[in-house]
Length: 285
Image 1 (cartoon, rainbow, N blue to C red):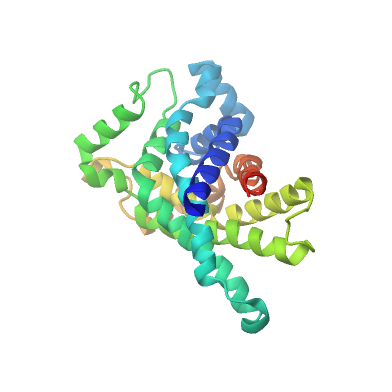
Image 2: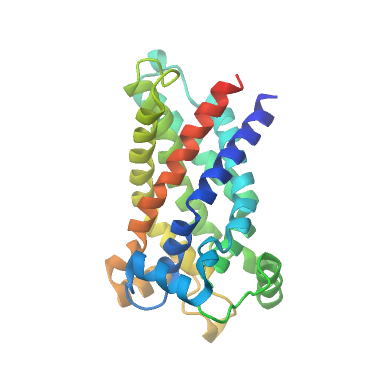
């Protein structure tokens, strides 16, 4: 019963926060996947999207994102709770290092589990969100993305960039869940049970920004890989290593962090998910 409840609470909290911050997510992905240099930045990119496709376009792909995000966060939180029970030892007997490592391992394992289940939706959302300009590449939305990619590249095309993605998500979720849950035990006398939501939100923001910045270069590489389709001469690169070389040669080290500022602002949503989940769990206890 607890597992099912955690599924619902995690998924609902995630979708609510994601919808509120969808414009920032769209801008971030356009910046990450745009060809060439740094471009117009956050404000210029948002203005360009609105001018070309209208204000509603800032939420383009949000339904697909929520369809991906609900099961992602549902599995994340439910599995995170299960993995913590199995992997986090008693701090008094095992010591701080083993205790903290258990939280990191549980977070990373939860992230890998959820990504494996929903990767085709993650892939499709990235292609939809990066579809800018007056003429849409995928006017039919999610079904159009899936059918077009599957027809051109086969079903395996929907898993392009998966190895890089799973490596990145393990790093990110280990920090996101591990530092937050362990941090509540370290910084709050009651483990966060009766701590102000504003203090917990501050911790969640600091944790998410730190984890996201650390994992961001991997995220950029995986999204660039997702944007590849076809074979041979049609592709700029076909592996993570060739993508890294391509980005560095054309854009320098800064290319790996394009859109990182938008991602840090978007951390509001990720932090909200953690706090909303905590509060919902408390209300339904």
